[in-house]
Image (cartoon, rainbow, N blue to C red):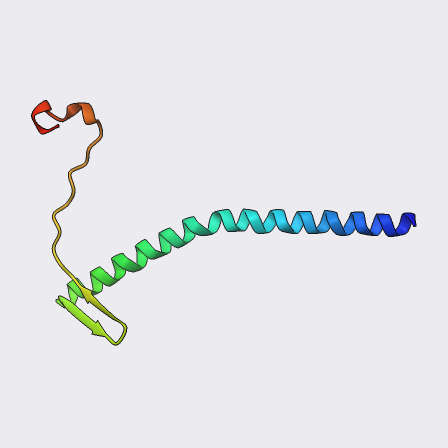
Length: 85
């Protein structure tokens, strides 16, 4: 009987360790995916820009490359003049 309980304890402990590792890996995955998607998007834009392609049509998607002005960095909202608020 003690052997059965001990085996169950060891199984539970191994399962808990594996689950913890899986959860740790899953917490890291979203950051990797966000980075990967940003890199792919930048690569697509760079290739289209260098090839002077403004539109790419595929059976399941259409890509457009358009010039977008850079955003204005805002470090402190207090710096915005009251007239614009």
